[in-house]
Length: 343
Image (cartoon, rainbow, N blue to C red; front, side, top):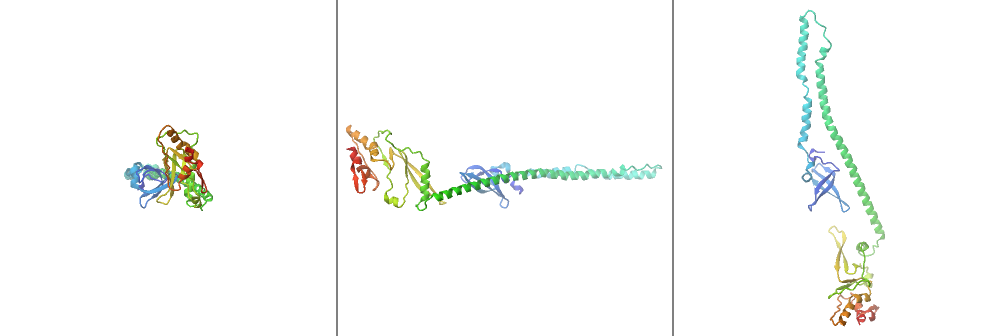
């Protein structure tokens, strides 16, 4: 790896800055020496994301990983000092001269002593330590680099293991998601238009806690009471398989499921919530509507007050059904309307 990457190796976690200004940790998965950048990955909302970041941005947020210039010069200095510790070169000529003078003196004296075998070996003995010291210097220099290589190899091996674990987990998640998609695809009726939106609405409704309006609920007093009633899908809508996008989870909440699409063509639901005094679902009877809407007005009239019941909605929304009574074909049962119940 190039020296300008400093302490950055594959598998370590570094701080990165997102385009929206957020700063969080990510794992280095590869090092690009050509363009002096690194590739990082992180997990966000269950998805694995990644990006390529230049070294300058990495070192600005992680100064402890930047390369140290002094460390590159310390090792040669130590090696030079250790190679020049022993001064055998200056001493060997002097000892050679001594040996030469020792040899010349016996020629002048009458009784030359026998030359001991240790003297000719003395000049060579200092030379041996120099060689060994030089060799030791190179060996020490090698030993300085060997632990770093071993540590880097250990780190790399650990990092490779971590990367492999992440890849295995990622593959497992992909397989699980693929299995879920296949199961849903088997259960989905593709003949229904917008079946994806329909299953999104079903999944959302399954997560709700339903508490619809019932006869056990108290009737609240309001000077102005605003109520809304959901009508069921009619025969024409059922024939073309239209979707029911209205949900009433409680007695005063109406939710509208609006299908939308992202820029990458991903479809999703935007659930809008509206609040009213009372909310009646499509299974509510006219008697229930009368109990919470017109009945308090009748009591006000008998108390010499003024009251008005106003039904508002587009054509076909169910105003006549609510106020006049149930329909059976073209015949209407007026005894079950708000008018008849109020009379």
